[in-house]
Image 1 (cartoon, rainbow, N blue to C red):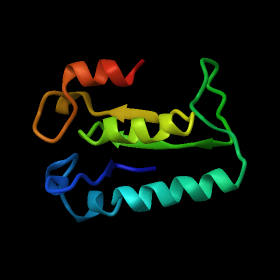
Image 2 (cartoon, helix red, strand yellow; image 1 turned 90 degrees about the horizontal axis):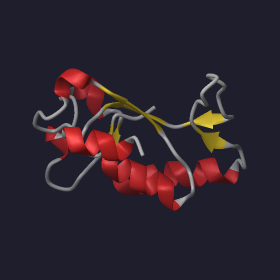
Image 3 (cartoon, rainbow, N blue to C red; image 1 turned 120 degrees about the vertical axis):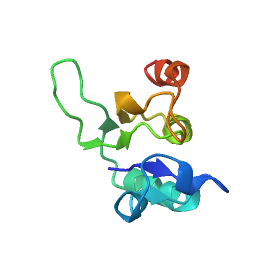
Image 4 (spheres, one colour; image 1 turned 45 degrees about the horizontal axis):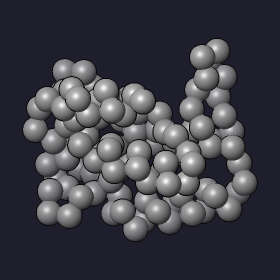
Amino acid sequence: MYHAKKISGISPTVGLPGALAARYKLEPELFEAHLDALALTNLEVGTLDADGLAPQVLVSFDDGGRSALLAAETLERRGWRGQFFVTTARIDTPGFLAREEVRAEAQ
């Protein structure tokens, strides 16, 4: 479970603020290292299907911070998809996804 990938120069303003949320915000290199370690397990990485059945591993992102787009791109480079939970009250607010970006994430 992640909240955000850090983005150089703007990380404190991405997603929810504060120390609690900050521990789930990783530097891009550390996030890649997590995914590298996950790949070594050869476990199935995916999302919940329409029946609610879970894959062996589900990588999730909370809150809908702006770095969700970068996280999705990182997963897609590996042929994986993540589960993104967006706080709808935060859409179109500073540090969070815009309405159009949420639509793009859903595809």
